Amino acid sequence: MNTIYMDNNATTRVAPEVLEEMLPYFSDYYGNPSSMHTFGGNVERKIKEARADVAALLGAEPEEIIFTSCGTESDSTAIRAALESFPAKRHVITSRVEHPAVKNLSEYLSKNGYRATFVPVDSKGRLDLDYLYDHLSEDTAIISLMWANNETGVVFPVEEVAEVAAERDILFHTDAVQTVGKIPITLKQNNIDMLSLSGHKLHGPKGIGALYIRKGTRFSPFLIGGHQEGGRRGGTENVSSIIGLGRASRFVADHMDDENTRVKQLRDKLESELMRRIPNAFVNGDTKNRLPNTSSIAFEYVEGESILLMMDGLGICASSGSACTSGSLEPSHVLRAMGVPFTAAHGTIRFSLSVYNTEEEIDFVIDKLPPIIERLRSMSPFWKEAQQPA
Ligand code: PLP
Image (cartoon, rainbow, N blue to C red; front, side, top):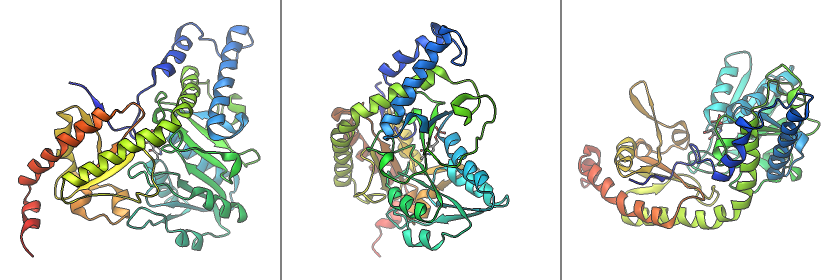
């Protein structure tokens, strides 16, 4: 059975050219980049190249990039650095739909001496900007907003908010883990102070991330140790993964057009055909302002987990809009924040494509999913109830 992988917001395939570039740095070139000898120095040079590749993808300078272990570490580092750099300020602003890397940290901070504001979104997942601006204060150290949502793909106006933050002397961080490589970014042209990315979301390896820190931004390291990363993150470098992230940055830059044309068309075809063939189905989020690869579809009156299981039996990989917590299926905090009705949030499936997806794969899903939904609904008491005349 072939695997049809449509779960690229969870993780992506390591591109073969990325793997190829990484492999020699496990076996042949294993020197420590900090060593004085040429053997280590050659590795250091390669890291420098990778840093330049990441910077080029972001429209930034190489010195503005530090390597971390993942997107989560980059997010934590950015927010904690802001709080440590401005100890008199005790307030963090974020949104209600952030990834746990920011959401749970902000909740933790709010129980440990800080104040956190969680900005709401509307039914399409769009940020309530008035609420955000009304809650800015002298006490606000940092605003941290995701650039694009991992569940719905909805894009936030982060550049606009960063401009307001700069006028108010507030640091602005964006979690761009889902955005980098999917839509063009030029950090030289905006006021974003810090940006997080993660290797495994852009066809690089897992366990590597990066944090952009604008030149001149006050910063304080999370991992205090050696002089690596200009003293901004101690610890011997994860050499092969850094090299993989550098190569992956070039890979996604080269495929950005394909992502925004062909992949987007595949996503749109998948969505419109499923909508046409399946009653009581709708797309979650602002379809006008979304990542090109993401589609969050609610199939009312069915359980997302059952859909996933039946698709899994056909080799189709996607995600649901629920999280299995303590034995009960809770709709995701993102769908709840958007006010998606329970009966729809439960039946939500996220498809997230990549440049490796083909039209044949899309056609396969379009063909196989409608009978799956029909079958599950025939067993659903909620569906039967909904079919009763009012
Ligand atoms: N932020 C967003 C928006 C994500 O989607 C993810 C991963 O799913 C992360 C942060 C965490 O990244 P990592 O898995 O590299 O820690």
